[in-house]
Length: 399
Image 1: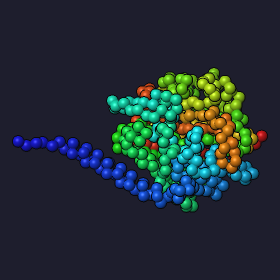
Image 2 (image 1 turned 120 degrees about the vertical axis):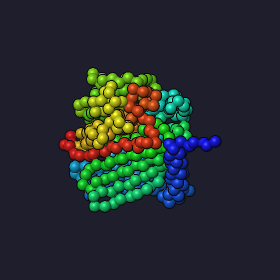
Image 3 (image 1 turned 90 degrees about the vertical axis):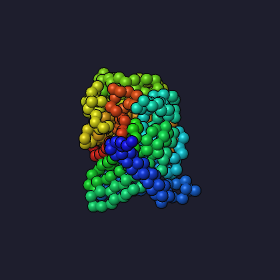
Image 4 (image 1 turned 180 degrees about the vertical axis):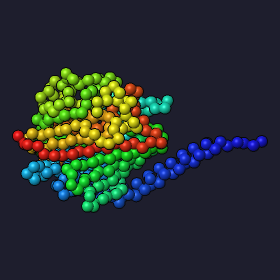
């Protein structure tokens, strides 16, 4: 007899074989590049790459977690202010305990996954519980504690930029699928703005939510002041309420009439003591951006709520007169007010106590993999994950 072979079956098999070989080659290539870009590991230090522009913005980036270690922005009088929290030694980004994720790229899935478990395409996956009963920021050895490879660097008349890459193998930290991630940081020559473009591809279905996790203090990371006097505006009329372990319940609720309402410019410290939730209190909430409300899932396409970055937040420091706009394509933003900072020593002799810095993490919604009414975080081989964020600085009148 004759055995018929389905033509589509051959095409699918060839495609899968090609993807597998591609991932294997990328992994081999990364191993070689890591050796090239990592300083003598006996010293436990890793390289710093610097981006600069003509307006005085300067960004320092390390290969550990593709982390931003310093971000200098000129004040109105020309003084450079380092506006992000961080460490003196790059090795601390790998070893610090407790881990605050200073400046890091976090993933494969940022924020919390309830009970450190999820189901995808009928299969149950168990993750490491590193935040009470929940999984947080991709696990204890998530992207923030991995060595990234520098793919490219540009320094030209129009911009300074760097592209870093990380290969996350199948079942790393419990997540299915081989995933290749690239992060590009870019400084335009004549703009007080830093852009961060995140891209990822997989060879099988997997949840993805990759986030930039810098802590900001526009008075300066070593100013000794908290962010209570900073003023904040969020382009969000709704938020996702959480349970006592900070995991969203699945509800989408209006911010109006609550201490979470930043639809107009408000001082952060004026209502921080009124924010409901477990100790130590403060803000740690996901906001639903761009007026999407309960339609967020329908208005988000392949993880993007907007084709181009839109204004998500404005942060202003009356003391320094420095302000920052955050623009993004993501559907959500986690406003975290540094509630768990415990006085640990940071760079330049600074000690970061509670509320010494804040995070404005543009993202997919926390625990979205377990909440079908939230925008999907499922990435398939036919898709590319895309997440863009821009931090644009400018000056206002200091008070």
